[in-house]
Length: 224
Image (cartoon, rainbow, N blue to C red; front, side, top):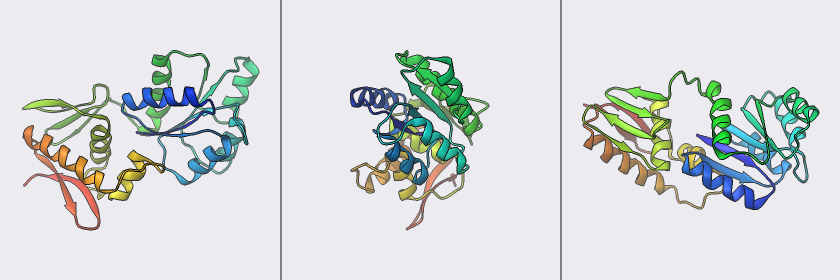
């Protein structure tokens, strides 16, 4: 799951990125409202954590602008302001939720899960395809033969594949969705992680496999 984090306090931003990545989110950090707006308009995010007090353009203005254009990406407002009027303004402007600094890390993660849950249409924390199950809560990939706890990028890749079975996903889409715009990673890193996942599926005796179509992408298909 890919998030945009718009927070101008760079030390806090760095800490939040580390926390979110440890919990298997892919995060693009930005430090002012105008850049946040540009990223939201050109990116493909599952959720946005948006600070209100930011330079160049404040978070409320960013929120109003994206909602005016019909962008329904879930937004969690993050701010030092605690007055009721500020919360009401944020929610009336289209925010899905509101969290006041300082906050507990577990509450932040819970609120992110809550605002993105409807967007992802998740009635369960588990994805299943064939004899394979992916548990989003524990990051475990399992079959009746065993289980693996996946690393961050492995989890995000197999989640994207299992959420879109038999649909070709290009390497560029993986890069955009998981590594983000500012990543310095080379595109062949996608093949490396596909290889890791193929080995795990094979070790689990999965009845699905990742197939490649040259110059097109990868898809999860029934194993033959």
